[in-house]
Length: 244
Image (cartoon, rainbow, N blue to C red; front, top):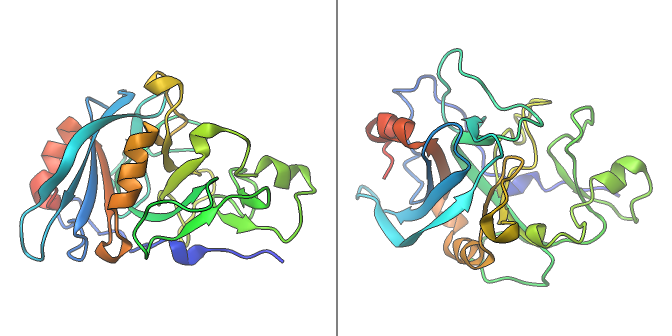
């Protein structure tokens, strides 16, 4: 029997205009990613927290990460998108820009250091994530009650013996219940390859140490979000969106 974990994804509606949108009032944790431009493959990451009605304050030092081979492009998350803007599509090797809720964590280890309310699933050979744009399960997770049998099931296995994916945190781009086929799938924070010398297909990667620190810091009770933008756009929307 297959079962879905849609409850992992804390998704809300998109605001109607760029000026009207702001970070949700109930969000008191935010991961900020700033890149030099739309074609940049490096990103500076930081965590910020706030008390109700108070200003954002940085938590710990900034750190570096890697993005898609072709940089960034507008993604589908909480934020509005400028009229006529180019959007992420499957296979473009660009990281989705904007503001996104976070889902649960997945990994190979039996347990990890995390907030009690953060869902964690130890990945087995029966845990799948679909990236096939023609699949009715596109950009969705499921667990089988049997070992994968079909080519589709085997291709979608989350556990492929790849250390870079041995720990990951879901970034809710193009996520349930508003999935658009072909708009990009399987976007995560995960461990970088080759000591940070490799780009990604659209995920945000970092050292294993920094990923573990990130996952241990976020608390779903504080509705953490991820804001990833080029520096110019970050400054453009900073005040209106109430970014740190």
